Length: 295
Image (cartoon, rainbow, N blue to C red):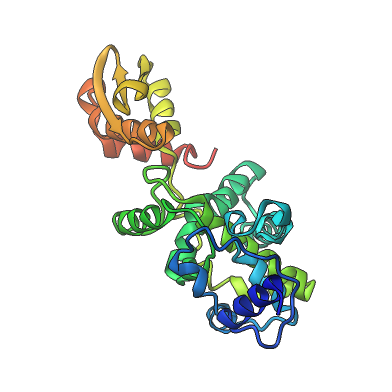
């Protein structure tokens, strides 16, 4: 038996794909494989999403990170299905929100859709339903990133609005699975039926929150306050916020400057009331009453 044929049979047996005969590339065994590469059980994934695939190769592809397959076989990773799933998911939310919120203008509808399909929201879906356990990859740092994200989301039950760092790969597999279901059934109605409950809790006009940076800019503009962000991220992984030349906020995060900036804005928003001489609740009520949570 040739080496390529042996490698193919070993992978198929490991993945419990006895009813599928995909053309699989040979895997370089010199690279140590992590435990997740041995846990792709398609029947378990089908049970989670409550959908049975006609073409199970699509589902296998949906959970295959580009790092898992040799470069010359990059087409076998989840990237193409992620591309399809992203488009389908945006269309589904556009249609659903158009029908549900008949008085909402395009701007608020766009922000509402974005809140439901962004990286953090979809990464939460992957964790909630355990889809991350089936991702095949060779990214040594991903496991710790997933653990950190899982711990962090407990502090923010619905969405952190940029205060925590969500691993993009988690969102990717949700989109690629959506793409796989669509390509298998060719029906957006079936896709919505499959994923509507999986995507819960869905953010609506009552639960959507403003991004901390946007929120801070709006309050400062309304109150004629001088706002300044000081970027110290390269030196200290920190961003500081000054209002009227007084420091009112600081945010730190070593892996991504954007998260540090968002944390600094949130900290400043919570601490700035001594500077402007108003109560936080009064300003938030004013913004809400005047539609600035949506505009």
